[in-house]
Image (cartoon, rainbow, N blue to C red; front, top):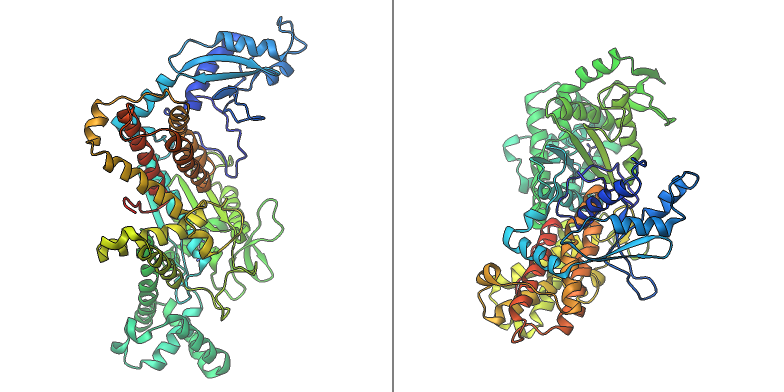
Amino acid sequence: QSPVTNTQSTFTPAIEIDNPASVKRQLAQLFDISLRATVPDETDVVPLVDACTVKGGVKFGDYQCNNAMGIWSKIKGKQTGFRGPPAIGQAIANNLPASEMIDSCSVAGPGFVNVVLSKKWIAQSVQRMLVDGIDAWAPQLPVKRVLVDFSSPNIAKEMHVGHLRSTIIGDTLARMFEFSHVECVIRRNHVGDWGTQFGMLIAYLFENFPNPEDVSVAAIGDLQAFYKASKVRFDSDPEFKLRAQQAVVQLQSGETAYRKAWKQICDVSRAEFDKVYQRLGVQLEEMGESFYNPYIPGVLDKLGNLGLIEESDGARVIFVEGVNIPLIAVKRDGGYNYSTTDLASLWYRLNEEKLEWIVYVTDIGQQQHFDMLFKAFRRAGWLPRDENAFPKCTHIGFGLVLGEDGKRFRSRSSEVVRLVDLLDEAKRRCKTSILERDAAKDWSEEEIEKTSEAIGYGAVKYADLKINRLTNYTFNFDQMLNDKGNTAVYLLYAHARICSIIRKSGRDIEEIRRNGKIVLDHEEERALGLHLLQFPEVFEEACTNLLPNVLCEYLYNLAEIFTKKFYANCQVVGSPEETSRLLLCEATATVMRQCFYLLGIEPVYKI
Ligand code: ARG
């Protein structure tokens, strides 16, 4: 593994990723050799390599090595013969081993070593990806078993936009892990299917359906209305309240009729959630809070034996380092809560499921909860002291979804927005604009449906994923469905246009893949080739910090470079360079599709 350090700010502890296809890492290996030769005594110097950015309209190279200044401040006083950073930079350049990757190397300013890559090498590398498949550009994460805990809505309550964020982000992270050759990626739906609200719901169910045979998904209907109505009963009728409280006890002691009623309520909820998952194409494996109930006493005993549990205000709590409030393990009334279940479920995940990395995706409001949970496990010796060591836990937080008014996104009646309605609306709008297009005149009904779904749902996902997850964002249909901005609509159309260029050429792309050759003589061809080649290092960055927006930015730039630079300047079909340029089109479409796949967006081939 090459010793590249990540210069980007990290939100989660960096993970060591083996990423041989990364240009940055390949260059870092060459610079490592050079640095060993340049300053043999400075053994702890690691190569700092980055892609060059445009400064004052000029780019000095494709990549740069930024070690000279740092080395100078380390060796200044010592007898090394160097007179300053530019001389060190020059020596680094001179000591760089010859490589087919590099065309030229120069030193600029205070010692930046700039590298211009060989266009032949860029062309060959892109071509190799077309032959070997894009999987050859995937990194290798140092873990075999990862669990992503995401979506996780609460039974009997509506799934809200916060759950939508968790679902979209969590699904993308799972896809990123899968692409990174993680052997086992578990997508876990930790649904809130336990707790005192079930007493109320069951009592209400019994009241309305004295005959359990009558209960069905259709009969309960709108579970949110059901929840509200039962809450009204609960708050106004002391006699009902008593029955509800007794129902909790009966349920927890496993009484058959109560278990059955509980299951019926869960089933109704699940059917609702599944509609959303099905629309979004998200797979989840449900293992709700109730599953861990039998494990709670054992885990609490173990924590107690380790001396972690204290009495506070009648509750049993765990104090952790650096947080002044404790994690409540058992409530004053002896009942269990959200934290209790998370203690038991994390124990289960580590000991029974033998997971190496557990990633929790929830809003940032739950950050402290998870911080305390992980710290409690560290105190118990159940997680390593070193946060970077495996097994490890990471909380992936995200900001709020806001409405146009800048407040939490709600529908007009100030209820939470129903996700199904939201997705339906996105689809409806896309369908309308597709039907307005001339090209769609001879599309089949099915094609129109499929395309509206791909674009509509894709737009909702992309609008969420393109923002750094830690920030809030405003939900706006007009913006996310605009076909000109940084939206899924624009990207899907760009992809479809590339596919149509290839189709219109009438050439057999598989044959060209095997026998054609990429040549990057035109400046814009080279720029496109280089950007394609940067996919592995960008993906690595997205993975290191678990930030899907990094991938979105790359994808958008790719579409822009293709459309505005390459395609605007380089004729493809009918030009002498047709074969090479078709291969560039194919490579662009391939990388775009991989990005779409990672973002959970269905590609469109025709517009
Ligand atoms: N059900 C919770 C909520 O709606 C999210 C659960 C997240 N996962 C966990 N293991 N705590 O806020």
